[in-house]
Length: 205
View 1 (cartoon, rainbow, N blue to C red):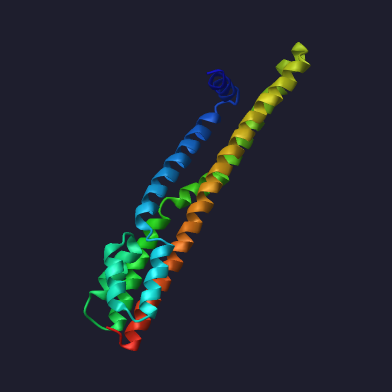
View 2 (cartoon, one colour):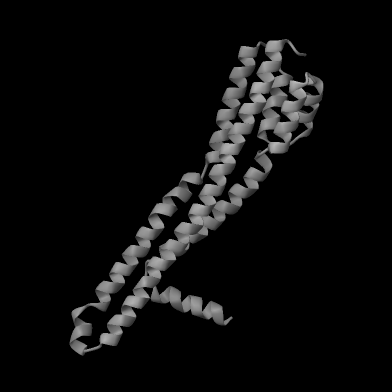
């Protein structure tokens, strides 16, 4: 309880810029939770990719199709629909490419907001610090002869910078995590798609 009171006190000492920083932190947490839940359902996972590619490499197309049909995630859905679709290899390739583009767009959605927050939060913190330091060095404080007030004002002004850096670090960690998961998902889809096309080129049924 004491820690909460202290945090609220520091928040008010940081100035008006703390409110947009609070909004940014809420956005980071909200986006991180929403993206995590989405990736959890959309990502087929590396285990599926390894098993699928192994079965396709062994020529067990039926087993690979059953694995894709019984697995979750967008990659499994795309290869399952492709393998059950009549047509040529060119049609299958075009279908997988178009579907992958839509999936990647949905996976990448909202990540740019995290990138903006990473850049904007330190700037907001710096702005709050500068505003606080201008107030600390105002002519009124000097006329009243309060050097301690100036020093204390600088310390309070630095709260905004520290808060901005904390929000930026949080956003950077979230952005890096989901960017890595996005890259992994793209790589896994490419591996599965290549396995399907290679099996078709060999004439496997």
